[in-house]
Amino acid sequence: MRFSLFLALFVWHSIAQQPLQQQIRNIAADAHGKVSVACSLPGTTLNCDLDPIAHPPMQSVFKLPLALTILHQVEQGRFSLDQPISFLASDLILPKPYSPLQDKYPQAGVDVPLRDLLEMTVSLSDNTAADILLRLAGGPKIVGDYIASLGVTGFHLQDGERGLHQDKPLQYRNWFEPRGAVQLLRTINDRSPLAPEHRALLLSWMRLSRVTTRLAGELPKGTIVAHKAGTSDIDNGIAAATNDIGLISLPDGRQLAIAVFVTDSTADDETRDKVIARIGRAVYDYAMRNR
Image: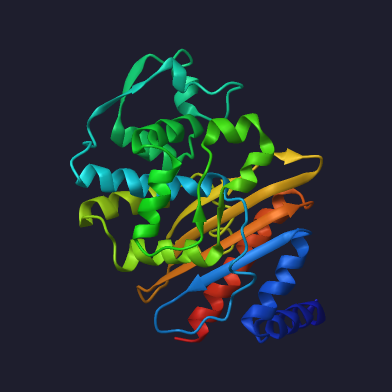
């Protein structure tokens, strides 16, 4: 028993002493697919990049830039958060995707406060609510242009959820370079274009995300993670996208920005999530050792 414990501690210590980039590369091998990673922590050099300018399909990760765009339009006076937004019959997506909104109102024809649509889109990753917001924003190009105006590179949005659910290959046209995703996270945290109350609201929705087994999966209990995940269906045993990008709060108050995209993986759901969780923990531990 003592030998087994000693061996486990020795293996853990050996892994922990590896360069961070090598740790990430070793963990990524379990995905049996393509893994791309980027991260950033002001004041600390984190050599965690793994194919950081890849073009992984982002799936629902696009809902974070979308929500940021809508909040910007709120501040421009185009909308108000309490404004009722029409959920039209033409907004219904069939066959029905994951959508608590569409579950509740299967016939549509109701008004929903913009604030609720935003929270459902970010926290619940509601697909139908996201497409309503995309319609309000003015379409993918408007969202892309706004994100580019913030100095964020490598974001490409071409299709909404309706298209992604009706034609699976389209998901590869919506991509986000990991380095660009980290730029977006740093922008939201460090130099937010939003008023403080709207930034706080967006971060609160990100902290309520229903996906808890990825970036947050192996972090110390109580660690605050504000994030947005993205997930594809599995087609012929291949998961095109299993993603998570987020801000991890360190005990000293600093915010670690990290983006992990797992693309075209043949591993099962638990393994893909665990790859992201282990990468998140490796970067967290490295940051804590190098303060």
